[in-house]
Image (cartoon, rainbow, N blue to C red; front, side, top):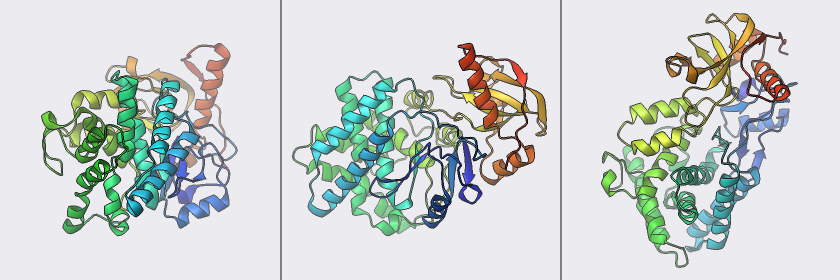
Amino acid sequence: MLRLPVSKLKDGMVLGQSLFNTAGGSYLVKGQPVTIDYIRKLRQIGIQSVTVTSMDPAYKLPPPPDVIEEKTRINAISTVYNTFQSIEENGTLDTTALQRVTDSIVFDLFENRNNLVQLTDIRAHDAYTFAHSVNVAVLSAMMGMLCHMPRDEISLITLGGLLHDLGKVDVSSDILTKNRGLSDREFKIMKKHPLDGSRRILNVSDLPKKSILATIAAQHHEHIDGSGYPNGITGNEMHRYAKITAIADVYDALTSERPYKKAYMPNIAYNIMHNISKGQFDQDLLDTFFNNVALYPEGAVLKTTFGFAVVKESKFGRTTTPIIILFADTNGKLLNERSVIDLYETPDGAKSIQVVPTGNELYHFIHELGVDPSYYLEEERKKDAAAGIKSSGVTTAPRAKLS
């Protein structure tokens, strides 16, 4: 998948991520072609960039499968939106609806357990909290499953993810949607939301195991090294569920577009969380998490020490070393023959990846190339399907003029 500025979209390009509005409705569902009207709408609501499956509008590749169904995600976002509204207005929430959503997420995850997390969604700025809560719930549930938790515990950590930011109902929308960094005063207000959420959860009478849910909300911004907030506790004092939720929370925040920043690609989030924020997260849990997230999503273009390539596949436990299709040399000149390389089988394979071009850089590179790399990906898939095996090797590269 290719991340492009909205200004570079063309009528008919297939969106690789769904776009959600405040109440959980979808402006556009991934896998559907965008139209001129949708492109205009994206500009109006301030979306800076989106992910498409191909730059050629005539080439309608489907996006990679998600870990949960689209209808589950839409219903979950709507339910979280209604939950926040209800809590803010009368201090109550529909625990039956929340449990129904929780059950759907857990069911989908077990049904789609063979899918890596690719990209999640994009959302209008004022819808960030609600879609973010769903993503955190999904990613936390995935972690619970990977840690071999019993199903009832996975359900509990999923519900904790849905409610972890409940305290944000006490934060003004001016702060939540501010298009630049927060002032010291505003950040002080924002830092209250974990404890405010914990308090609100404890005040709900019919919420199951609410003490644990309240702990998740209270501790999801704490760090293993004690540098987090609101209480600066260390890893030994953090609940295991909160350690998981903290990872899911930061990952989704980094890979989401905000009014004051662009969305980072998953590999950048990996670098930040593993290196720049080293010591803030439980290392074993962090490794488990990123072993199941596609750092280089299918269809992404990479600049490597071998040349330019498109990602064919990422595998569990090998997400730093995807299988790639090499189609151009290091100068960006098309190769007469393309080759499939499994970076896991290559010495220092992870280090061979230099850059993941996005935005205008990617747009101009592909236009100068004159070929959409998505063609190579689709041809390899067709070849594999015809052979009935996971193929690799060398084939002739077709030339496909971009419109």
